[in-house]
Length: 222
Image 1: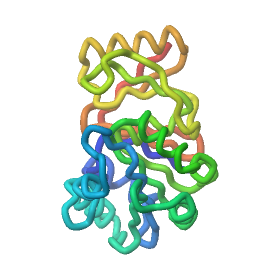
Image 2: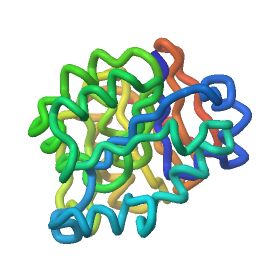
Image 3: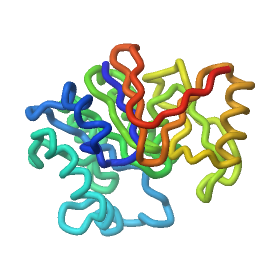
Image 4: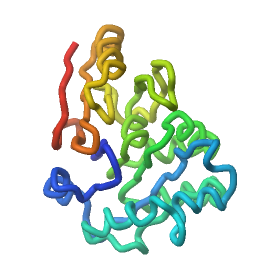
């Protein structure tokens, strides 16, 4: 299994492309798990389409063009739609994909919706490429932490999908006090390495257990 933990959906960035092109192939099919939206922003199918829809979605072109850089056609990219997909159709998209792609946003709400659709088993059984940015990166861990920000005012630990359990991840790292305090707390309480990916400049790739740091990533050890 390949796990790719990213900062953003610019997957064709210079610091990523040469490494990721070894894994992302033109014939690959992609299932985009678009479940990480904020409840305050998305209350209907129209709202969902305004984020992820082909015609008006503010994230759609960025996601599709990122994969296009690796030769993957738009026709090979399917979005799992919270409002129109069923459990069965969502599972089918996952099983037919070579790449499962988790988007950024709220990881705990994404996890809630994954459970609501009974997708946990299908996702855990996917043994090809798992990738995601921000929320879609941390959710790949067995347990992840979130340092305080506007969405999460208090530090906390959360349940992930358990693809990876050997480290923790601090995304969007800028050396802020809240981030450093959170990292120190994780080191003390969990005793595992924390990788801090610099804002839009770093990523972690795990190839069948072998960890490779891409771009600007700081390593904090217990």
